[in-house]
Amino acid sequence: MDCDGSFDPADLPRVADPVLAGEADLMLGSRRAEPGAWPLHARLANKALTLELRRRSGIRLSDIGPMRCARRADLLALGLRDRRFGWPLEMVLRAAAEGWRVREVPVDYSTRGGGRSKVTGTVRGTARTVRDMAAALR
Image 1 (tube, helix red, strand yellow):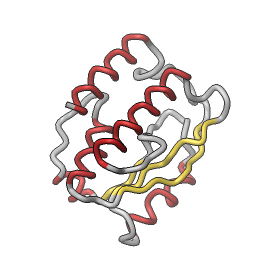
Image 2: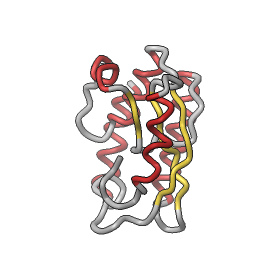
Image 3: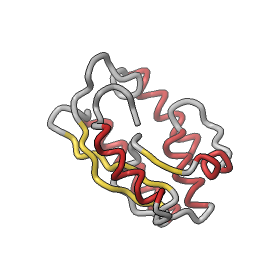
Image 4: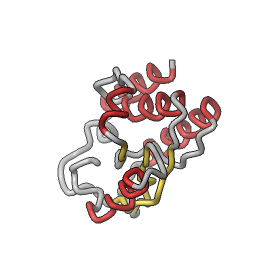
């Protein structure tokens, strides 16, 4: 999960338990955002990505958020290549291609504890994210 204070670590068991119980291969925390915690442009981009993900893979998610759980060996076997901003999408696409059981549960999402997001907090970060996500879709 992101370590900027926007997620509550108390939600980690809700994300991890289905993987530990063998009920899912990849769990994602779907953000329930408090007002002002998630910029409009990021929410819209996320919605577009989840729709494209559904079209390509059949996986129905409401968020490709950063609170996740998967078994380490399985995750490494996916062979993720992106080391920048496209990895969240690449992970779900590769997991879907491998037939993983991908699920999500709602998690709380609050205003950042401090600082500014390198992804959605600047025009440059947003542009980099769009470029990296587009590469993951290719």
